[in-house]
Amino acid sequence: MDPKQILLTTSVVATGLMAGLFYGWSVSVIPGTRRLASTDYVALMQHINREILTPRFLVPFVGIPLLLGAAAVTQFRAGDQRRGSLIAAAAGTYLVGVFGVTAARNVPLNEALDAFDLAAADRDAIDRRRTTYENPWNRWNTVRAIANVASFSLVAAAAVISERAD
Image 1 (cartoon, rainbow, N blue to C red):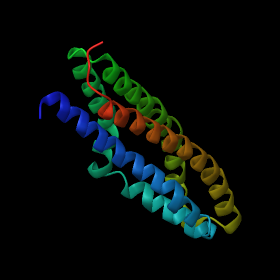
Image 2 (cartoon, rainbow, N blue to C red):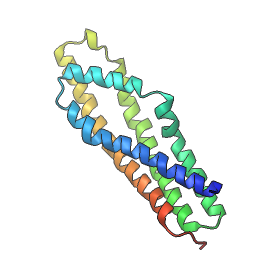
Image 3 (tube, rainbow, N blue to C red):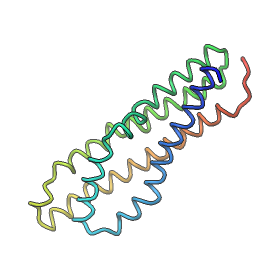
């Protein structure tokens, strides 16, 4: 397998894994957390938001736009404009819809939740904290999930179209 094919295959796998994470979260974790009491919800989300900040998540999360960009460049250099364009679109979709939304919307919500002192709060404060976090976080997570699946679909399409120089 040549470097162009390795980059394309790795891009499909990495983007697919991340899309699966966000999709799986949307269809399983979010509905499950709705059933939790506010105190349990806030505690759980504080723990999850701290635990996800590991290289196992951060390296692929940050690396995917770079990987997609490199894959697009190799396709363009090989003269395959169709594949290069699909992969570039996947990179842009991921960069704006996943990485950008995460940085601009979800991370600030996570940081505010992390700063919330659950042990010192009363029930009303916990309920308010949950409401100001959960609804917007879930909304932006849906945007990220859709963008992730779109990015994956674009790079997967690039992998299955016939190779040709335009």
